[in-house]
Image 1 (tube, rainbow, N blue to C red):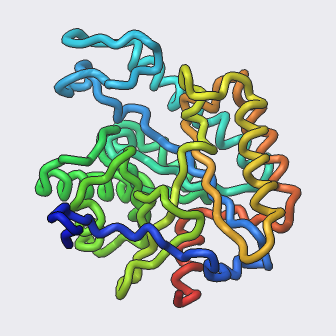
Image 2 (image 1 turned 135 degrees about the horizontal axis):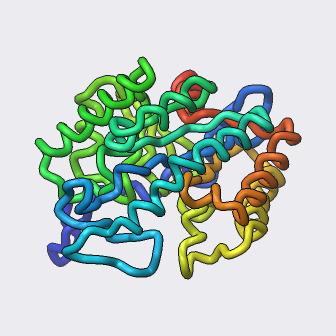
Length: 301
């Protein structure tokens, strides 16, 4: 860490990035946009006294938050994603012939292996999303190392294949990326929100894949900005079409989904509209995140 005039610390942050002239990603087939659908699988990994955790989930699906007593209602909201949402979302992607990355919490998969096994069997990518659904910032290094190992093991046991991608809930720790590199089996992580193109870590075969929270069904939460299905589809399609219309090299966009959120009947038409829109646009490369990361490494940039 360098010092600014007056002795103020200056953290090492890259606020320049690719600048005004980003590299041409040369997406396959001459595509103008690489589009990544990420389905977050967290059902069974939420914090719950009923599951033996130290507290209940801090962000319940209902406005009421219970402290010090079990909250079966909160668990039931999450259960909907596994019991109903999984199948509804899988059928939607099947209908449009598109593939996604299912970002899975290890404890969810250890408890219900089908949550990873079924998407994997249909050709979707299974990536890692931590063990419990919790923020890793501030986590002890030894604990975080164990979390990574346990998550990898749970996904491997359920699918027969280890995950090559990682995404921390909201905020990674200062150690996360180093621990992922030490593991040696990760191709990419999505712990960045700062760009619209991937980047390779210097001297490493590891890609940082940007993610985003605006084109994301989490905004159906109270005050999040989405109320109707059309709010979600109009916003996502607007982002897609605007990016396609821009001159210069192509970019990448992520659309985030959650089984317990987007799968509600009044919201599914929004997802269906987005899938239908992109399925008929040949200038869009809808790809699993591992495929985008591998393509980026092949560019040598």
